[in-house]
Amino acid sequence: MDITVLLLFVLGLVLLLAGAEILLRGSTRLAAALGISPLVIGLTVVAFGTSSPELAVTVQSAWAGQSDMALGNIIGSNICNVLLILGLSALITPLVVAQKLIRLDVPLMVGLSLLMLLMGLDGQISRFDGAILFAGIIVYIVWSIRQSRQESRQVKQEYAQEYGPEPVPPSPRNLIMYVILVGVGLAMLTIGSNWLVEGAIVIARALGLSELLIGLTIIAIGTSLPEVAASVVASLRGERDIAVGNVVGSNIFNILSVLGLTSLVSPNGVHVPAAALSFDIPVMIAVAAACLPIFFNGHKVARWEGGLLFGYYLVYTLYLILRATEHTILPAFAAAMVYFVIPLTVITLAVVLARTVRANRQTMAQGQNS
Image (cartoon, rainbow, N blue to C red; front, side, top):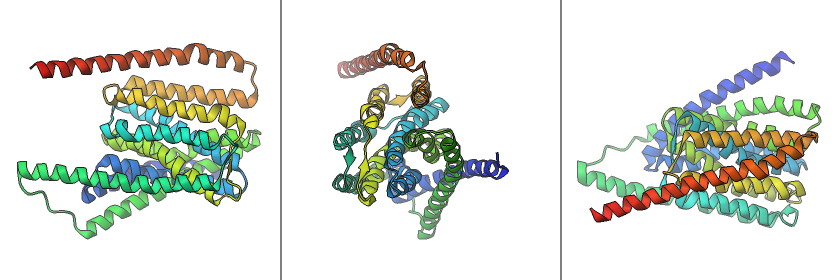
């Protein structure tokens, strides 16, 4: 292997980690300065910024006529965000889930995943579909920021009544510095991920992998590296709202903005292969829906749930490889997943969810009696 490729790989990894740290510092300070919660910063600024590689790769692929790779990148990134990134982050430290995510953002993520399936049933995401999706991201951003600022004002008023006047707001110079930190962090994340992805694509094509598979795995993981770095570093630093918000926000951004803009700029929209309709998009929907019982369970993602998500990502990736290589073990592997592993997981989550609901009812009943 060329020494230049190895050097770029190492430098890309360094840029990813350093960029995630700088981005996190700038984002948290910018949130405090603007009166916006860290969760909304994670859902918007961090999520959209770390999804910029998906946007660049997907638009470029669609413009070059490689719509299968473009769609595979979006689907694979959304699956990777939940299973790999959320799983790894929860393995590092249990993640606290805000009520806003359970009440609005996760249901929105599930609904958009279903909408993507419905739009693609005719085999294409048209330019008109893309315009609808892209308009949705503008509405989502404006609504999220307005809601957060209203909540922040209420918190500040309560704080002032209890403890006196609030601290002096930061100067314009500090605001500019925070914005620069965010920009530098995003730039380092983007450059680092690009260096890592380029080598992987060359190797994958040399092995004869299909464009859809490359998009679902290598490009999806590579373009998700900024999210990986940002969420993992956020978990290590205790910024759990940003870690979870980044994952959910990135998935919403990928469908509304990345798929919407790609469909708009592509001459014939985005082609949706039959394989994506029958397997990959349903998996993306199932993964998004699985967040609801996991998040609702105590409003947190425990370590064992993170391990479960991460384990499923390994299984999903293995299935894609077996399917691409048409390995003889594929039928037995698929049967074991469909008839044993997945039902067992569903039953386990259902039992845990039922216990959580019962415990909450008992707590409310005790509070009313007292």
